[in-house]
Length: 132
Image (tube, rainbow, N blue to C red; front, side, top):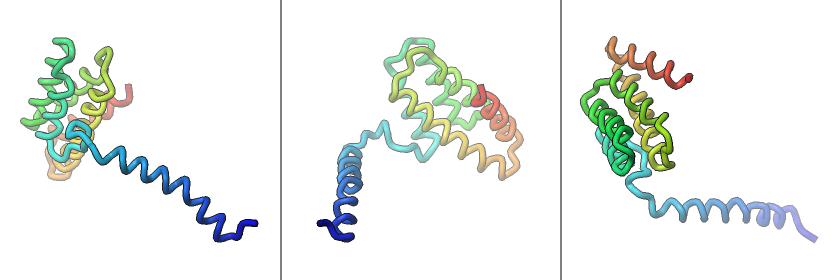
């Protein structure tokens, strides 16, 4: 006969085991998979992820990376969209595009708050391209 405390302990065993497994899986996290905290980090992730991609896709990734570094927001949006929709994008490549897009959105939000009209246009373009 189980007591209410026994049920609680055994009921927690599975979630605790899952948490331990997930924590163990994340212990050896690659630099390629960590969240980019700056546009430069996001640009580097894109370049590494697409280094072995077909020429056209790699070129678009390089353009996106350089645009992120230089703060050329509209160019970054268009290039990231081109890369994202390229055929045969791998999981790592897709994650790099996602991280770069998140970093770009954060940068755009800050620039829009500061009154940057170019950032506002780029954000509108990004929203339109994400809707497709």
